[in-house]
Image 1: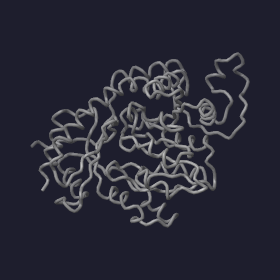
Image 2 (image 1 turned 30 degrees about the vertical axis):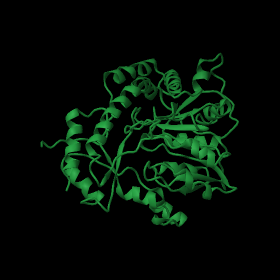
Image 3 (image 1 turned 90 degrees about the vertical axis):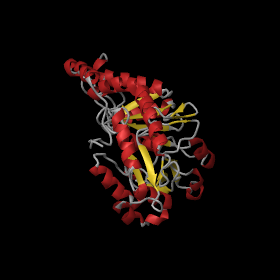
Image 4 (image 1 turned 90 degrees about the horizontal axis):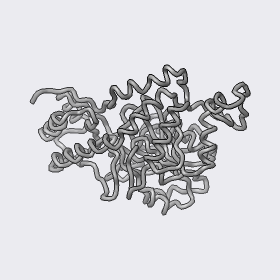
Length: 380
């Protein structure tokens, strides 16, 4: 077989995105403005929520969500042990303590059955992560923790759903990422979603230094020379209109992107399911997967090589791979600061050591997918 060079992910952009940025550049309005507002309206409509508020990235979205829900020093917030570090970091930004919960190794998502024993009088939030584009089971989480606020970390989950309910519409606040590895991208960028009018108003102020009105409202109002009132400490977490213009184009492509990824995810699953040492992604029948990544699990007791050896083999074949993500409790800062041992969360540890993401994006050719599958099937 011919050696290829297949990236783990590439953003799907082109002439439309290039042309879209002309308007903010030539209008002179390049900070948060009308294009961001248009992107927000489109994103809210697609995810069936009343409000969507664009921010600089998903980490700042998580931070603002926790602040708006009143998370403060002394509080505890439950997070999955297997997720990108920003989920836990956002809790620390508020002076609160992240309380790790193990995952279901089948889904890679937070295991609702593990939550009850972690609840205390200090619990003031749960951040389920819709990891790799598969929604966490929000209904079960609400059943075991009925009075706890939920922030959906939907960084990977634009367009994903459970029973037709989109990610970002099931908790109190949803948070999304538009990093280049996500299905839709604005370079960097994030989005908050909520159906709560008061929370939306609060979040809108928090992202803009705590100002009572936005820059756009002030400049287009009758007295643009009057500075706004600041009734709270806020942050500069705004998105630019250049990014918003790109987002307007990208969000219109989201469903086509996911449909194409679904087609090739199905192909991978069909081709790879006979490999006894490889677990392909599990998707419950009523779930719509967003397919930010196609993440497999290598059974260390059955595989002919270790996960890292397999990734090195595929790298030599021109196929980029990555671990699914990391177990946050195994990272140096968290181990030292909280005295956590890797074995404290055995499923997260196993996923950390044995998960493998293979290429799945909208710039791959049919030949690329076939090459990846054949190379994996050829491992012995």
